[in-house]
Length: 266
Length: 180
Image (cartoon, rainbow over all chains, first blue to last red; front, side):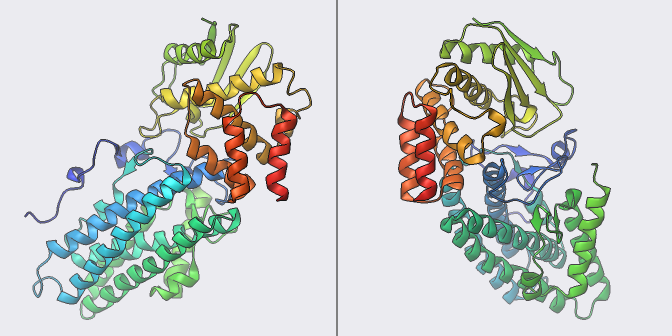
């Protein structure tokens, strides 16, 4: 079986339509983000918004396809690298555990989609998460996926959990809470392996953190994820601390979002 | 077939065809028994899904470009979504003209609960006519406004299944969920 499986060849049935990053970023109306669109002045996602339930449905579908890709990415990490030469066996064990979690998240997301009245494949799928999981360096891969993207997942799940709470929807609230707990663990895995594998390699550490920033920036459209009260997705400081982020790192993500928001067209 | 005028005539940001849109609007109107001129204005710059009736007589509709979009293929025209959007607007016009909605507040004075309840009643009827549907999506919207309870679910079913409710009945059903 070949190593590093290309994103274009991921298996999907006829229900799923892939939207490339070029298509996504070249939409003159703005980029789809957080169940809304970067061109609008996106308000914090709450049930009180006229389009709140529909935005939540779209975001939940984005989470669902993200879970599929996270499963595919963690699965590839189990296979793409050799024990001893590339990675320790324990890293593969963590990735195997993550596969188990992501598979469960896929099933939860399918049930949630049904609960919210969404058909599988109703919205376009973007493959950016899996593309980050194609990095040939396992340290960069784990940093980009587990720290940047799973870090974003912490923020998204917490926002959706609050959405469920505000709407009085216990199904959404509890499902998001359970998945959130797993995401904190996944981010912590990324933080731990980054530290362990770069203990004596400062250059590799810097490259990995730079890759994390690149991925974080790609998901910072108009600063939609931030600490301001009206940020569509709330940056979740507490859970990020639990996942091994330092205060400086969280400040940096918050600053990046603030800058992106200030630069956004009004 | 009713005469339909679509503005703009050509699109720069989305891959829509005003002739195709006009056909879909005319087809929906015909199935609802509307045989009069309809004007549709589209804001192609907006990918959101808002829509409104700007005039009841003559019929003038306004929609975001996103309200006619294929959600699987951004920027492409979505026939099913367009039928749903246009159908909801036209059936509301029919309701307002029926005499059963004389005591309903103006559209701009309706709150989100009232809109969700009326929408459930509109889309249920549209589905039986073979236009639109997505019952579970509408139920999720209704639950967000009226609660995730058995009472709200029974109210939704009543709104969805009924053929000709008056505004007073819709209001009563919606109100009962909120006070239960």
